[in-house]
Image (tube, rainbow, N blue to C red):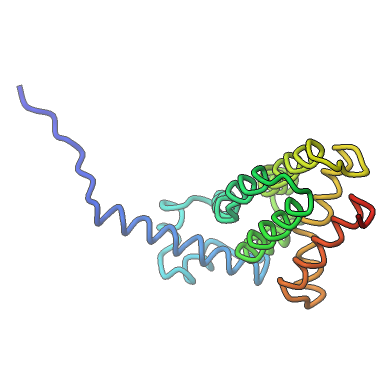
Length: 207
């Protein structure tokens, strides 16, 4: 009885496939952030990545699937989990808010192109609400965890935990960073300092 042939996976082939996917996603992110999701075609992405449209579909999928992959990579690249581990280890509210300012600044700064690609996609995406949920769900949940952590410390914030979570989203969410840095021309460092100070002053009445 003949022995079944084993599928052979070439490490070099796998590495080449990974590089191709990365090139496609990088090209798509840049195009979506610069021109907008609605004005970019798979052919545009293929040309920017130096591959054929057929390769784009085979390697990454449709334009919608590409955007989903970009969002997932952006969430992972923000390293929010490491930032939240740091926050959870702190017992001084001021230090917690300073760590939130630093952590969310780092995530928004490194992933600013992804955030812009998502922002421009929302009005024209096949399901903008689902895209926004995919992009922000873990981020917002992490800030909710931070709010609950603050309420376990002394002194407690002046607002209840739900309101504190909403305020953290207002200050540390992506819109705040974009408003100050991209629209206002602030430096990331200055924005981090002022957002953190605003959080302390509001939640603890300047104390």
